[in-house]
Length: 253
View 1 (tube, helix red, strand yellow):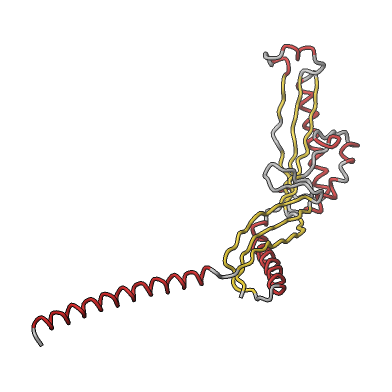
View 2 (view 1 turned 90 degrees about the vertical axis):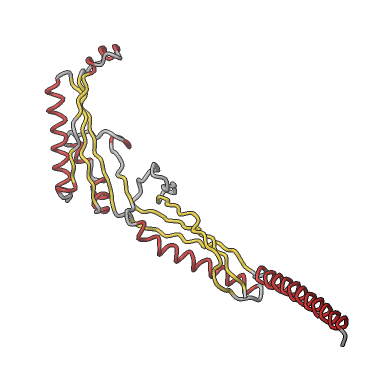
């Protein structure tokens, strides 16, 4: 074989090799695209899991406040002090422990000493004394029972100053909410799975793993239907309804 023939063979081999490399690269590209396309075609179903649960609160704060007005400073002080003592005695008789009862500071306003409102001088009483007794307890049933017996304070001459005809509402709170959260989310997940299984059964498929999950919203309602989720919401009912709505995406097989 002449040198020219050898050179022609080498050139041909190089060209064939380049063509093979291009073919392999192109084929690999399309195989890869086909694999990606297959993976992206996984069928899924998105459902919501709902759970509602009634829970009794575990802490109450009850503030019993009172006000006395008098033309005499000593008289206003004496009368508001008597109100506090009678209220503490009432609470102890109801069964509240001493460490659950807190005396709030007394405040006395001299209306004639307020320069910004000269009209106050025409009012009947010069001094206004205010104070309160606050109960903080986990004994919810005792608060409910005692609330119905505050008439005894009225008969003793103590006029409670606040809402509902002079009687402030206790505030009922759920301090163990974070302990309940995992259980509620588990029940919401189970509810969503049952819904997804029904959908899959109707479609002739089976449920696979969870692809994504969103905790969604958690709302707290009083037994009167008021939304108490926000910190400033009313908390006047001892039983709460917790509502959890979560979103889940399941694979279909």
